[in-house]
Image 1 (cartoon, rainbow, N blue to C red):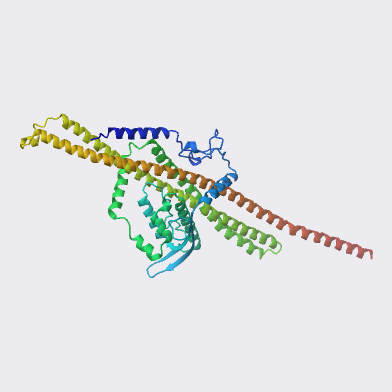
Image 2: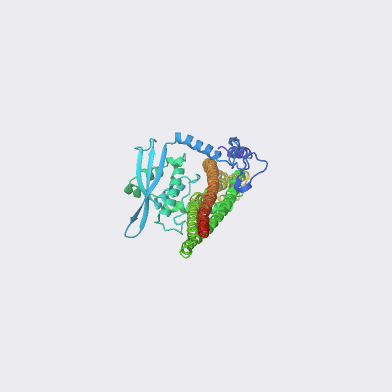
Amino acid sequence: MADSGGSIDLKEEENNSSTQSEDNVKFRDPLLTGLEKDSDDDGMESLDLDASARSDITVSRSSSLIANFRLDDDFDGETKDLFVIVDNPEKHTGTIESYITFRVSTKTTRSQFDTSEYAVRRRYNDFLWLRQRLEENYQTHLVPPLPEKHTLKRMDRFSPEFLRVRQAALQKFLTRLADHPVLSFDKSFHVFLTAKAWEFQAHKKQGSGFISRVTDSLHNMGASYMMKNRPPEFMVMHEYIHTFGDKVSVMDRIASRIVKEQTELLGELNEWAPVYTLWSNSEEQLSDTLVQMSRTIESTCQILKDIIDSTDDQLLQPVKEYILYTECIKAVLRRRDAMQMEYDMIVEELNKKKDEREHVKISDQTYSIGAFLGKDPEDVKQQKQDRLEQQIADLQRQMEMLNDRTVVANADLKADMERWHKTKQRDMKDNLVNMADRQIQYYEKCLAAWEDAIRAIQTPRETITIPDDNLQKTEDTDNVCADTT
């Protein structure tokens, strides 16, 4: 019987080598560390799992950075073979409830699809089922988050604005799935994109059992108590995700408060503009000036409304998505920890059985229970050794299987996290640069509106003053002529 000491030593050597290779992994993010004075890229380089693969391109705060990323996206688009579009929301009114469906259009060149184009209609619950199924089938992969069912409480769920925001979130969800090298080939994803309504409903009923879901929840609960020996790389990852989630939550609260204050200001301006219009009715000499003031305030109201809408669409919603992303990553880490916990428990049990086997070899079975029952002590000893050998062999097979699962889980999580970091870096830079540009445009438009108002108010004064002078000169000339006569 082969001893498992060599296997365990090999595993420890692999862990040590992987730990040494990961010692160079450093997590740097502008949201956490701020701008570093000694950095050549103004501290805007985001974290990467593989420091050696970091780009040498100098990062600047100019819009050329965004152009570089878009060029990369276009290059990826040349090899992309699956495109999914979510559009055309449609309301359905039933006897029990009313709901919205979205059209999901697919174009692909993959051989697993029977045709190159599909168009189906799916509701939010169908998207939710898809994500749950992917999370069950790929527990160590990072499945993109879905927006919460009632996140926009201030909006009617059938309003055009709510449907526009929900459509954009669902589009981003399917785009991220279509770009994933593993999740995009899942059977459930294929059925979601291609199956007709009755086929899809039949497939949805083939869900996982209640026992498996309870078992997963128990593993996750146990993992929260056990991780004393979590590898350093995953400790760093765990701490980073918690810190990143806190920082992004602060961004969400501040941005939400700013939008709320801007919305209150918009309401006050909308009440202020009609005041000048009403005032102009009682001030004939100031009528043009007051009307111009009212028009300028109305135009600034529209400018302010545009910046509020753009902040909500292009900053608040992406930030909320990454808050949900942090929760997804925490769940994947918990599942990965559960696998590690199960492996450690098997190793501990295996070591106990080995110690027990050594103890049996040197022990005297003369006073054992079997000896008192009249059995040969050597036979009793041999039976116990055989039983322990069988248990050790079974535990070794379990250990090897769990070791393979853990190695695969670590590789899957690292690959997905590296992909997520790159996507996060691009999204955050895009969103923050665009927000800065929108703020500049907002103040430029407001300044231009009030400068136009000043010119419009001053121009009538000049036209009115000149005729008054000419009229005064004419009256003086008439008086002189009269006196002469």
